[in-house]
Image 1 (cartoon, rainbow, N blue to C red):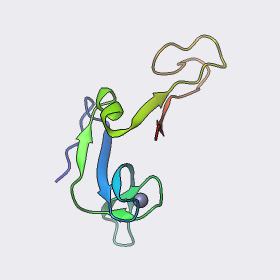
Image 2 (tube, rainbow, N blue to C red):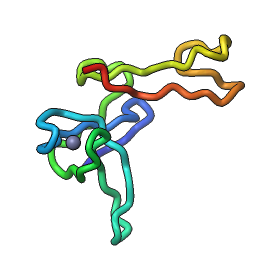
Image 3 (cartoon, rainbow, N blue to C red):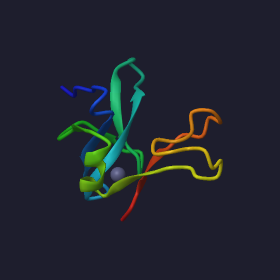
Length: 91
Ligand SMILES: [Zn+2]
């Protein structure tokens, strides 16, 4: 089972279609079951899922892109204008 904590808010898994480890999104399937999908191609991932922290994302080829347009946001995004940081692929 995948455990998600505040320290490990992201889940990565191996996507057979992409042929690499990818960041996943969480969705519900038709049966209302929680499923993980490949953020790149959308394929459902069931195996080799691993919860990672924001700091560990870099090890998996991702980094947190912080919106800087508002000028007041530090690391983690701006809390006052609603601009959120988001994980992006770096390779
Ligand atoms: Zn994929």
